[in-house]
Length: 502
Ligand code: ADP
Image (tube, rainbow, N blue to C red; front, side, top):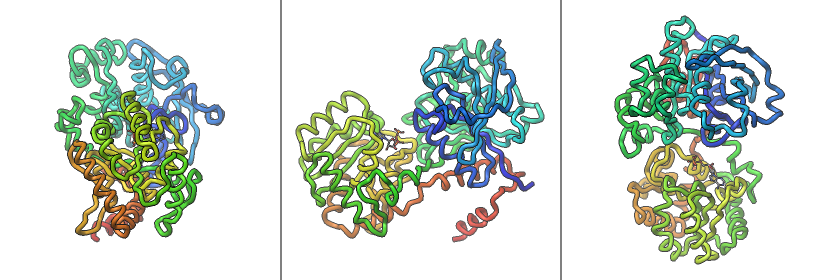
């Protein structure tokens, strides 16, 4: 049977309608790439009060029905709009979603369980869409595979639906008190469900449901998929990941290659590309001047962009920042986060005026100018499911210095002095001096071996971090669940076989 695979991508947020973090970015970009890769993909999110009016005005009513949730019988409307060629469905229930924010309410457990149930219930009401794969994301939709198997299994329409669950953030798991199991989910009387959802006898863990019930599990980088099988990274779920490792894989996220393009970026002083890097020197001089650093092309300019938290390796930075700044190295940090780190950075910016700058704020335009004008991006994370900053930096010929963990390990090829290959620099252990010596090595190469540096920049800028690459991998995964559906895009498949032969 040759047709498109029909995928319903369920998430609690999707840019540009609602975005509070990385999930919003992924749900905003990946579906379009999936569509281009040949899937019939539709996205489902709640209809939030804060969705811009311009979008709300374009929505049309598709259908409405009732959703049962424990003892409740609730209204559910489905509205639809097409954005960049992809159909978005919005789950309409004013009681749950007509609020100022997406999260942070006393009844989040109930609201989110309602959304997960509405997603599954809606599958029988969507005109001209019979779902093959239900792709759920993070704890907000983790209960959909549970409801699907416990309440809908056996109904002809649901029999062939397979489920994929993607973990974007393992820290947030949706831990609720035990009464939710019966009162809200209606699952207390099903021993297998109760057993798999309980994390201990007093609480229910929504994410555990997704991890135990989904046909396939993915996370946002191959290395992180391996790491979460260990207690150190597994956030108390490592035993499930080890048990289900045969269905667990990692697919590296992409970045928006149009927004982050040094050849067209309108935020930066001068555009540049791998063929002509002269614009990058102008960007460096401009940002040095803007931030009060001495304007000197020969001093390596190292930048950090991101949340100032333990996860991002701030503990290592704190330990050796004084030693680093004693060298002829410039350091800029753009970010907000824990007060302890913000204060520490402000202190060093005062002490090493002209060599260090602490920008304690969130400023997207400045981040573009820094990606373009810096020589290196430091990202010594304790753990990193995927990480975007290092990929963005490489697009701009700014070489990342990373700890070998999660998506950092998968996206940065460390410099090999014997073969000349590499797209950046890396170190293995969560150790401040290991980080510092890696940074010094990079600085020495920057100053002493310009040819090597230029080659590394070319390698970095030549990497493919587009969503198209990730979408291709997701399509393969979906196809593995439905071998009876011949993948729609024949030419791409032939290319695959060719690649393998080579
Ligand atoms: P996280 O774990 O926070 O999601 P990522 O590296 O995956 O980290 O993504 C961070 C994204 O947010 C990048 O696009 C980065 O440029 C941007 N960002 C982080 N902090 C700031 C800031 N203070 N100002 C501007 N952009 C920022």
